[in-house]
Length: 193
Image (cartoon, rainbow, N blue to C red):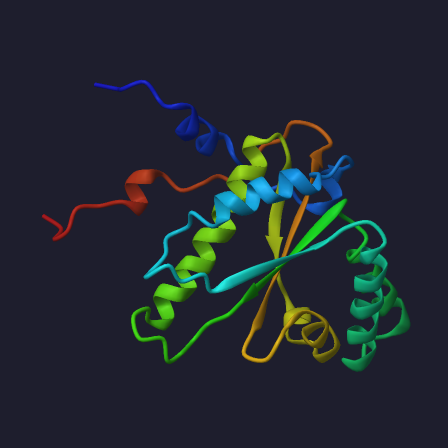
């Protein structure tokens, strides 16, 4: 028997990632970002641990990020054309949110993988909250999360730059680019019979 789906589940089943070329203004407001962060803070946690923080890159701050991306590309030996392309990536989305992990290898309660699960849960909650509020977005990472000038700009000692969430208003209703696997392929009984 199929039970009616609560609004939350219905929204989750409709969510898909939206890349930068499909995002436009308006971006979430500061108040909306705070509500998304409240959702992120309800991620799985262990002993009240919050092994993450976010940094909103809005407005003119995107130009500073673009400078950092271009600098990182130059340090990596990329051509001027490739460095210019990297620069533009920081300006593609209306809003970027840096995701920074604070993983404590000596934490007395939470193991490393539990801390990383909390970071992932926070990221997922943030994206789900954005979708519920009518925004689109996705997580981006790549080599820049290890580039010295970018890391120095975002991270304090002991932190790791995970990547960026790009956010904005979807230009048009869309669909996922690829077919998701069937749930029966992902969830099975154990032990197999």
